[in-house]
Image (tube, rainbow, N blue to C red):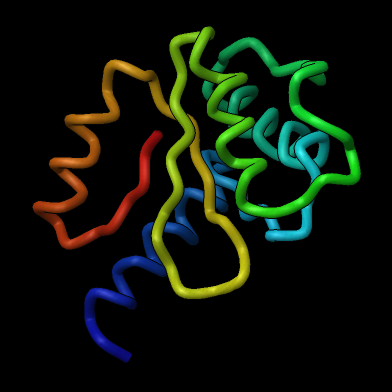
Amino acid sequence: MPAQELRDLALLDALLTEDLAVECDWQETAGEMIASLNYVLARQGRPLLSEAPDLGADDEIGPEQLDLMQDTLEPLGLALVQFSLDGDSYPLGVVALDQTEELAKRAQQLGFKLHTW
C-alpha cells in the first residue's frame, strides 16, 4: 500500500475514533446524514442540526444529498468537508466556513485530498 494511502487511512481512522468525522454511505438519506453529522457537531460543541424541510424527500439518496447538507450548514457558518478516499462511502467532517480555504491549502501541502463546498 502506498505511503500516502496509509497516511490517509490513519488520519481518517483517528478522526472517526474521536467522533470528529463520520462515514456516510452513498445510499443514506439526508435525515440519516444529519443524524451522523450531529455526532461530529456534538463533539465540537456546536449546535445540532434539526431536520430541515428543504432537504428533499427522506427517500432521496445519492451524492446530491451532500450539496443539500452544505446548504443546511452554510447559514450556521459551517462547511461540509469530504475526505477523498476510494470507496463507496463519504468520509465527512464539519469545519467553520471561514477555515475551509486554509484547511484545503494545508491538506494539499501534506498530500491529503479534501473536498469542501
